[in-house]
Structures are given as structure tokens and as C-alpha cells.
Amino acid sequence: MKNKLTTRFLVSAFTAATLLLSSAGTVEAAGGEVVDFSIVQERKSYDDTLDGGKKENLTGKTVIISTNDVHGAITDFAYVAGLKNKMEERGASVILVDSGDFSTDKPEIQYYDSKSDDAKESTDKSKGIAAVKIMNAVGYDYACLGNHEFERRKDALDNIINAADFTFVDANINGLTGDKVQAYAITDSSKSPVKIGFFGLLTPESGNWYDRCGYSVDPTELHSTASETANKLAAEGAEVIITLAHLGVENDILKNQKGFVFDRDENGKKIYDKVYANGTRSVDLFAFTGEDDGVHKIDLILDGHSHTTMSDINQKKYPGCHVQSQGIQLQNIGVTVIDNDTKEITDRYLISEEYYSQIGKDPKIEAYIDDVIESVQKGKTIPDYNADDYAESTTTTDDATVDTAEDTTDATVDDTADTTVDDTTDTTVEDTTDTTVEDTTVDTVDDTTGDSTDDASENTSGDSSGNPGHGGGHHNHHHNNHHRYGHRAA
Image (cartoon, rainbow, N blue to C red; front, side, top):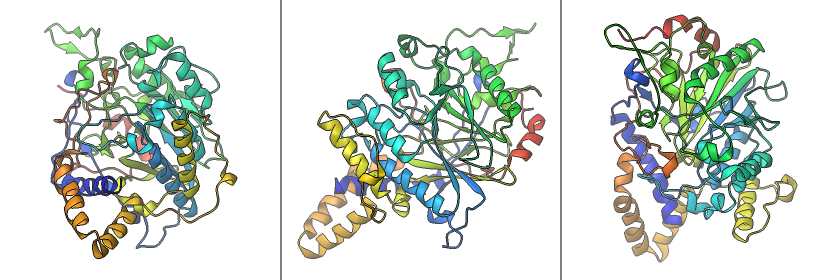
């Protein structure tokens, strides 16, 4: 385990360095009408978020911590809790959100060392309940359902929903409503002085999983649903509107969409008056014109499904259209900072797993996760989290840091051969291929077949010429609505 953890962090460090040398990834909107959504990937260490090495005061700020496609990496929730603690210590109001696919493992991932075995595949063995219980303990506020939450049929889905202490926001799942599942929600003053509206959108790409659970997702209604829901949130006083989307960005997702009929003009050219009706990804939301369209009111899409790592799309080309996604299995944790006075998003970035040692684990959550895993492995009922059951202690030092210290001690005492041969082989030979590919590719998602069609050709690395647009606040964003959506092809 020690060598594996050390290797994983070294892989991530090398991959982050190679991003600077990579070309920009691009995706096309449905029908090719709006093209070249260059993906920007901006990562930061936690120390980079501090002012000159000192803790920047976040009083007067709301911080949204975001995750997606956790897929069994439940041991890393201790870092999410650790980050929440640090942001609150700096004075921020903190909201935790997830964009789906938290309730299934993924033991094998192309170009990545899967974290499912770290938790002994406890997510699958508990039919998703282990992840939900831990998310409750960490303090998640909102999540959207991913297609994999429907994988085990309705009874298992109901158990997942009922076990959650957080609210599911899913606007486009036909037939699924209730106290725990709402189309949208607006934060109250107990969470943030800013009225933040959240709503979810789920991919139609699921095979027959939705049907087996008794629900449906109509791809032709996605855009209209997004528009109507955003308009409702604005009318009800939401000052910042955020979509928790399980849609993805990859071009190959369009290949799985069937049954769309295109109108044509007198010359036989396709007419895309409703482009999004012919596409089902987060970027397709932007391939639309119209002054009254509620999509213009969305300040940020926190995306999932395609396992893409991106902090934005090219702001020089598409100003005000913001998308962020954290990859898969907590390769990154997303951070969004909102100013409580101006009601604007003032900063956004991804913290990569190689920097988690700077965050540290919440010791109580780490201990609870161990108890959850043990309960699952022994076939026992998973206990609810009670902070009083766990002793106070200092934040846990990251495994990679511990490994470095242990390996150094071993090398100077009696394991010189071990560290020189075993660990070197691990980091320089076994994972060499991984280091050149890991996050610079997009996992193509055919989730109905267990992601067996990973697309290594889709590059999602940073756009050196693109502006991440982190300073484009809410009011600026709305003022530019009519301008930024005028990119229809000739």
C-alpha cells in the first residue's frame, strides 16, 4: 500500500507538470454549430490559495466545494472534510455539492490507478450506502443523481435517496419527485448570505437503467428544462445560479444519441433552431441563441459523467460560459469562491490530489470511514456518524508524506536495497505510461457498459491562450448575455 500511494502522488505530480506542454482540448456542440470549446485546466496547491504564505481571510465569502464521479474513492472524503475545515477556519461559509456517480465503484480505470481497492470496494458491496453515509458525515448539502445511481434498479435507488441527509436536485428526471429529490433549491441564510440556486441535469445516456427504475430522461427536453428552471430560480430571488450537471463534454457522447430529426432549409442545409435538443452535454447548453433563454442566467455548470478534468472553457471565445469538472475518483477537488456582498464568483480552481497533503485529513471523518469499511466487510449495518464517538486529534498527515519519511528511515537503516529497487521500479517503470496520459485525456463514457470505451484521444489540458475567466462575476455575466451567445455558424 505504501508504494502504491507514493506512486499515485508522483504520477499526479508528473502529470500536472506535463499539462503545461499539452495542446488545448476541444469539443464540438451538437451539429457542429458551435465548435472549439477549448478546455482550460487550472490547478492549484492549497498553499497557492493563501496570501503570501499567510491564511487569507475568507470572512465575507461563500466557498462551494465540489466533487463528481467519486466511483468508490471514499477514503479521500477525509480530504474533502479537511478542506471544509480549513475554509471554515479562514472565515468562509462552506457548501458541499456533488455532481453524481458517487454510489458505485470503478475498480479499473484506463490510465489511472483506481482507488476503489483502497476501500475494499465497499461502495459496491453496500450498494452505494457506504458512500452516502460518509457524505452525510462530511456534510454534503446538495447533489444531483448520476446515471450509475440507477444501475441497481429502483429499490437500491430508493435506499440511496432515503439514506441521504442532503438534498438531491434533479430537474429533468421524469417521474422522480419527493422530499429528498427536488428540481431545484435555494440556499437559506443558515448556509450563506448569498441566495444560491442549485438545479441538476442528468444525462439521457443510460441504456435501460432509467426505464428499469420507472423513470425517464427525455433528451429533447433538456434545454427547455434548463431554461425554465433557471428562470424560476431567478424569479424566486436566486442571486447566483449553479447547475449540478451529470452530462459530460465529450464528442463521442453525441454518437450515442438516436432519434433526432433535423429540419432543413430550401438548400438542404440543417437548421438548428433548438441546437440543444440535438445534443445532451453541458457544452451543448451554450450552443443556443435567444435573448429570453434562461440558460443565460446560469453562472456556473459543475459537470460530471465524462470524467473530464477542466476548470473552464475558452473565455476569450465564449465569455461568461463557465464549466468546471473534477475528473474521476477525487483526482481533484473543486473550489468556487463567491463574494457575499457583490454576489459574484470571484475565484475558481481545482486542487489536485498531489497537493492533498497540504490539506490533510479530518481525523474524525477518517476514523469513521475506517469504521464504515469495516462494517461493510463484516456484513454489519453501517452506523450513522456521531462526532462524539471519535476523539479529537490533530489533522492526519498525508500518507504520501508519511511514506517519504518512512522510506527515508528505511533506506538509512536496513532497507536500502528495498527503497532503491522496489520503490524506484514502482515509480519509474510501472506507471510510466500513466504519467503521460492520466489527466490530459478525457474518459469517454459509455456508462451503460462500464466505461469500456475510454477515449484516449480527447485531450483536456489547459489552454495557454484562454482566460479561465475566474473573475467574471454574476452581474457582469448577465450583462453580457446577449453578446456571448451570438456565435452561431454561418
